[in-house]
Image (cartoon, rainbow over all chains, first blue to last red; front, side):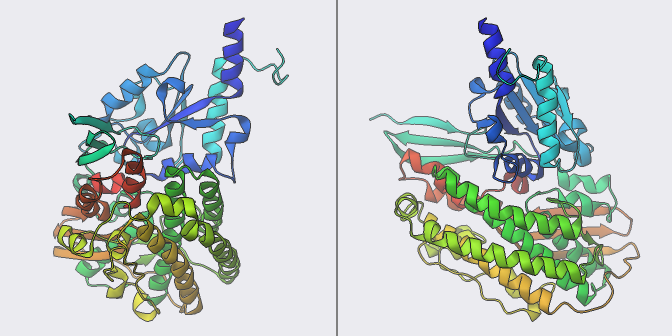
Amino acid sequence: MLGKLLNLGQRKSPWLLHFDCGSCNGCDIETLACLTPLYDVERFGIINVGNPKHADLLVVTGTVNHRNAKVLRKLYEQMPEPRLVLAVGACGCSGGVFRDASNVVGGVDKVIPVDVYVPGCPARPEAIIDGVVAGLAKLGPDNGQGGQS
Amino acid sequence: MKTSILPFGPQHPVLPEPIHLSLTIENETVLEARPALGYVHRGLENLVAARDMHQMVQVVERVCGICSMIHAMCYCQALEEMLDIQAPPRAEYLRVIWSELHRIHSHLLWLGLFADAMGFESLFMQLWKIRERVMDINEATAGNRVIVSVNVVGGVRRDIDEDQVAMIEKELVTVEREVKQLSLTLLTDFTVKKRTKGKGVLTREQALELGAAGPTLRGSGVAQDMRQLGYAAFKDLDFEPVVETGGDSWARAAVRFKETLQSVDLVRQALAGLPQGDLAVKAKGKPEGEATARVEQPRGEVLYYIKANGTKHLDRLRIRTPTFANIPPLTVMLPGLELADVPVVVLSIDPCISCTER
């Protein structure tokens, strides 16, 4: 019963934690643009939180380097399960334009498991929202009846 | 009373980017702030060994996604100087138009984040709503919202036609009107003043001594702006740097606010004087030697140094970014503040960590 309720809460109002992991800011400002009036995902209950313990969804932008890999792993471990990880942008998916750079380990999946890859340089807000929706399908089937189950 | 050390960052709700500050505090008062960097370091400058000098334009655009066009323009100007070519007049005007559009969207973005740091969420949403109009212009003229990728060595890749000029002018009227409407809130509101006036003061002498750049420097009363050098088409445009004398967070916000309106005016001037002609000249040859270029980013002066050795790869690329110059002044602003004011003052220098660490 409680599990069902939590699952419903997660699917209907996922809270996201955003971590910039060495991105150029392009994807970060597009992630923030999702929350502002033009796209406004807050009307669907998606809220940007600062605390990993409150978050259902980790949105990671940018490549991983040796220094922030530790921070990223720590944030991931602090999040309660079930959790989703979204790698946003070409850099987050594979290293992108920086893949040959000296201090770059590679994509986010080198450090933590990734559920959804959102391509683009930078990823458009529509693509990021689409990625979130695709990720939520992993948490359980939506019977299309809103809050009823 | 014993002092304690409080970590601020790297992951912090007000910071869009990771920077770590070790704050030594006594009760609620900050005694010392020590920054620690390196969370976003990618080693971009070393990529010159893997990419040739024309491919590097796409790499330097991604030094910073917010002012990407300005980074690429600076790099192209340095390379053009070394190759001894001159971008055509139309390209120079188009560069001014896109770089000023970037400045408008960067300043609106920052003013929004600044409002958010004070907990003024509705102002944040209002400013970002206006910003979307500028993003629409970017998308309509260059095909992408954030990284527009219009620069090539020797000129620009894309043109702005008559319809687009009309569209830009129409949107800018709305942007200007809406920004002016917010001036009452942003500059005179009691809450905003209470949170920003007299907080994080940087005197004129300190700013000069510590080498502050951009709005941080101009907020302390120094009229220095790289656009005064007259690069690209700025030599033909009417332009005066915006200066405030307070040196506090409020002064820095006021400088950026007024620069937003000034940039709207500069785009209009450039559109009015847009000459006809080619978009780019051919950039040929494998140069040898050194060159530097300086341009004004939304955050201050950015300097590119390049060294070539006669092959298609550059020998060395060095980028000196404004936030790097503004971190030493930050360590002077923070001591003596209440802990609750730290996020606002840290944001007041408009930190762009991905520029700083590259």
